[in-house]
Image (cartoon, rainbow, N blue to C red):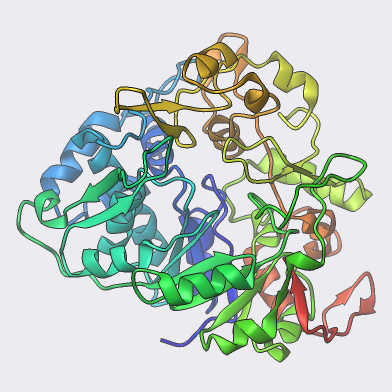
Length: 491
């Protein structure tokens, strides 16, 4: 399998949907769908009536017809729900999920990859977060049933994933050790998935996709290369200017004058040591610029991963009005990103676009009623009696404290699950006067996305981005920028 020069970043929730990934793949690069919260995305899209019929067409190709029929019966609303009606809430992920949630998760991942791969022979990947562990195994299997080519994973240390891919490809049960706060020494809590049980013994043939670990340090890359449960096929080396979740700075956390984490020399990745691992790697974080691909290739990389540039193109899943607002801000020089050290319930720094009318502003978030009704970023904790509990720092503070959390840890947390769904038009209706607001994330390059606009145009396409990235002599504001020759990349 030839390696792509450009990996289109897997941006969640549903920003990197199948339409974007399919377009990029047809252009000869690696299109990537986001696997984050796909069960919710798929269920809500079905409740909106699937007006173009794409989802139902893909479901009909699912290899276990009775599962497909159940998922449609439980989630599809002919003609779509009324805009004033709330979405039906799907079950929250748990260590022992019910069959309905497992089936929904498998089918949702299958459908997303199937549609991204439909009608061409290009490469398609899917991106997951290590911090969201509970739905991982059924999600992986659903993507593999649709013949996904790559699995990418960051936001943690995904040591167990390569081995899980090996076992799932062989039709064998897979296990994933789940992080549990307060677990006793030697105590393990395992998520399990058995393809043979799920398929009632009639196993479709699936291939093992390539696995790329998304890392921000040489130490993590080496740990994955040497200690992962199976073979790691390559790495994405992601810097701190990339969107979404960032790796925390190494060493004690220090903040700058506006409250952002400070990254320093310890966060610079030595690419010579990465090259010594002998695996393909791609550079990410502000690489969506002319000449950066050529720079990465000179440094020994196979190419680059780019997210933010694709996030605001026509084919991305972001609501059109949010794209237009960001592009106008970029043109005006007012598009800025704040690296919030506490917004995410994961504890990782999270990039938030400062955008009026969204949850990046203090007043709208203060007015929002705290609620945790999706639960993808909940933490598992061990109760005194040995059973498991679930809590989220973004849930109502009193509820969080009753479950053993602290008031301090709940301060400043934001509900990413609901906010990110609002970015793609799947926001929950709370009342006649309240809907969930968007919570925009992007990399630092959001300030520059207007560069992709042609004269007289207010939008741009994924093809415009690919064309620009492949042309190292593309002018920016009338100036041709030559590539630099650094030996390291900040992370």
